[in-house]
Length: 314
Image 1: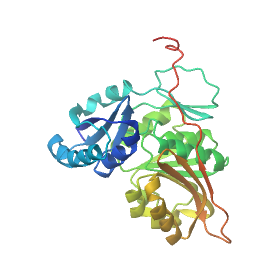
Image 2: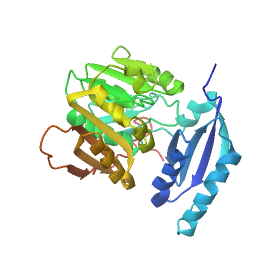
Image 3: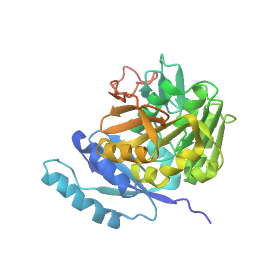
C-alpha cells in the first residue's frame, strides 16, 4: 500500500518578522511537515489528508489572536501542490546558506565561491532540511565542537540528510540515518549520492526501533518537543557512558520542560546554545559532580550566499 502523500497543501501567511517563530511553531504543532520563510511571508506544508477547509478552521482563530495582540498577520492562503511538482516549488526559493563559518549548504545547481571547508549539496524534495532553519544550524555548530574522527553517529529524524552528510565530512566512521517518512528516505539516498558519501551512511526507515540493540558515540535528534517526549527514555539504550546526545527543535519557552526531562533520564546538560527563539543542547550521561552549563547565544546569523553566477546582478 502506498502511504506517501500524492499532494501537499501549501499555506502562505503574510507575517511580520517578530511573529514568524510563533506562527511556524503553531503550524508544526498542527501537522505541518515543514515551513519556509520568504520575504514578508511564511509558507507551511501539510501532507494529505489535510485539506484547506480544516486547516483554515484551525489557523484562523490563532491568527486573529495574534492580530488582537498587535501583530499584523494576514489570513492564510492555500494551494495544492502535486507531489511531482514538489521539488520545482522548492527550487525557486532554495539559495546557498552559510550554516556555520565552516559549513556551506547549497542546491546542486548553484556555484559559489567560499572559504568553507565543508560544502554540502542538498536537493530539495521535501518541506524541510535545506539548512536554513535555526535548529539545523544549532545541531551543526554543536556537532562541529564535539564529533571526533572515527566515531559512530545516529541521525534520528534525518530528513534530507544534512546532519548525516556533515557527520561524514567531519570524520565520523559510521553514520546511521533514520526517518519515519518514505519520501525522506528517498531524499536521503539522493543527497548521500550527490555528496559522494552513499557508502558511508546506513539509511533506514523508522525510528529508534530501526537501531534496536545498537549504541552510538553521538546521537543527533533535531525533533520537536512532543516527538522527543515520546522517545526520550529510550535514548539510554543507544548510548554508552562517553556518548553525547545533541538535541534541537526546542523553543526557548520549552526550556524548563526539556531540562526536567533530561533530569529524569539522568542526563546532564554540557552546553546550551540559542539562536533566535530556538535552543540546542549538548548532553551526556551524569557520572559525577555537575559541571557548570555553558549557555551561549550563537552570534553569527547565517545569510544567503550569492551565487558566483549571479553575484553583482540586480
